[in-house]
Length: 118
Image (cartoon, rainbow, N blue to C red; front, side):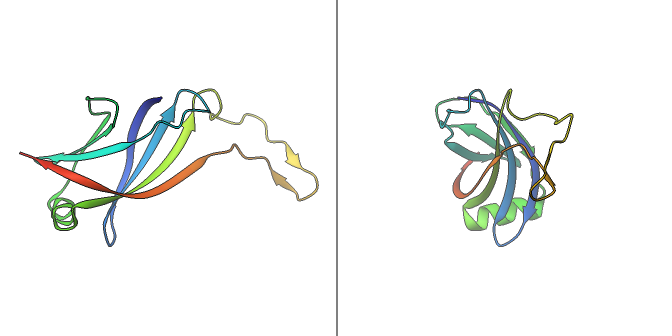
């Protein structure tokens, strides 16, 4: 189950590109179905099973024009899980290749349709 969603960055490429941080409650949670909508100049992101918006962001004129022109938005999602992803206090190098261990993160990229509401 999705706990929180935050919009970290919005870029204009071929499509409007939105970077999201999605925090899940458990490592085995796979229930994330994003739904995007624009009301006025506000981009809202929610999960399909919920009615309430979980993240909002004000779009500028150029970003709004690109979203209206294409009718879809590219999502770049970084999934994190409470209790698994945090700050690594001590780095334990892997002797064989001389690199430090990293926390596992899952990334996802998708193009989603956007609905416009007046």
